[in-house]
Amino acid sequence: MTRSPDWIDHGSRHIWLPYTQMKTAAPPLPVVRTSGTRIELADGRSLVDGIASWWTACHGYNHPHIAEAIRAQLEVMPHVMFGGLTHEPALLLAQRLAALLGPGLDRVFFTESGSVAVEVAMKMAMQYWLNRGEPGRSRFLVFKGSYHGDTFGTMAVCDPDDGMHAVFKGLLATHDVAALPVDEASMAALDAHLAQHAGQLAGILVEPLVQGAGGMLLHSPVVLQRLRTLADRYGMLLIFDEIFTGFGRTGSLFAFEQAGIRPDIITLSKALTGGTLPLAATVASQRVFDAFLSDDPGHALMHGPTFMGNALACAAAHASLDLFEQEPRLAQAAAIGATLREGLAALAGLPWVKDVRTLGAIGVVELTRINDMNRLKQRLIDQGVWVRPFGRIVYLTPALTIGPEDLQRLIQAVNAVVAAGA
Ligand code: PLP
Image 1 (cartoon, protein in one colour):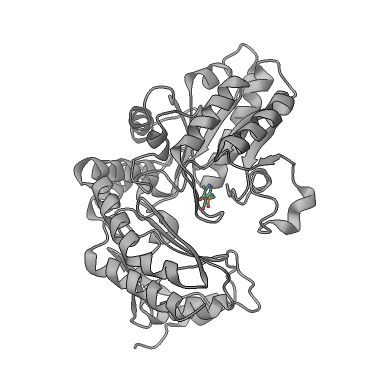
Image 2 (cartoon, rainbow, N blue to C red):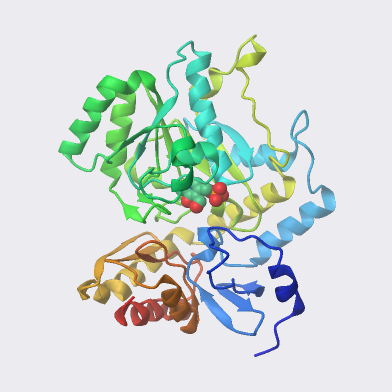
């Protein structure tokens, strides 16, 4: 092990960390280098990354094709403002995303984070109704366990009972929270709710197939078909948040493909740039877009982040999409899923394991409870892996390019640590 560099001591007095009780939490691990599926720490240790930096680094770290694309773009134009100006990387990326998403998802609005992409989707949906002369439709139907971001708009569409944003609970807009229509009974209950309240609802907002940060809860494509049916029945917009599920994570390029239906608005981010630069997209149908066309300037969408359409990020996204075209990412996701299913199965027999589930390149071990989260995290690190449990969940979402040895390291580490008790 090498001596810790000075920047750790000096900088730690000034940094404020995410989701962290700064008084009691263990200090973050200082990283000096990444490559492939490895994170190298300042003290020389190399950890196998089990979660691909919050599911972003789908091609592994430092992929040369993405690095080259960013470098080339940097020489030409790192960024120009998007108000009144535009550029080739953004326009061609909009065209490429629309082609990949297929008909009905036609207009791309770029932002720089997932939360903001969801905020924009919410603004689009609410103003869609305002512009059409229906001012009463300002709430959203959202689902138990949902997570859509940390900004004020998106905190309000997270499950209010999961406690994450509890401190702001009384200050947030209220929306309608329902159970996902997983069976006929919950479908009938939701139908009845909408029959009464659809006139006040702008849309239905859901993460398709997996509620990710909200508990790694899986549901079947049938649920999405039911939501499409209800949205059509009551004339509501259907919004899919694919910030977690997009770009191969669930086994198809987009999760909605598995349901054979399409949303009216979709949000994308995270793996859009292969986890290299911040970029997000809110993509709407032509019908939604057309509602903003008017001789009244007040009907325009009033949103425009300074760094929207950043040219470096767009170049990175193009390179990431090239890799999806040139390399067998979806087959890799399926193979990872099969290995996770087999490798984690034995844990299901432990009394303190509530459930083991997998979908695409996602493996989830849900415990009945975690007694000491800090100790659990430390034991995973001691096993040489970077896995970050939350709530009662230990999960793996590795890069889709992870090799068999590193994948086995992750599986063995999770097995060893969970089997020893949490
Ligand atoms: N929506 C979903 C489904 C997410 O998983 C996340 C982040 O984890 C977000 C929204 C928020 O994205 P960001 O952290 O980029 O703001």
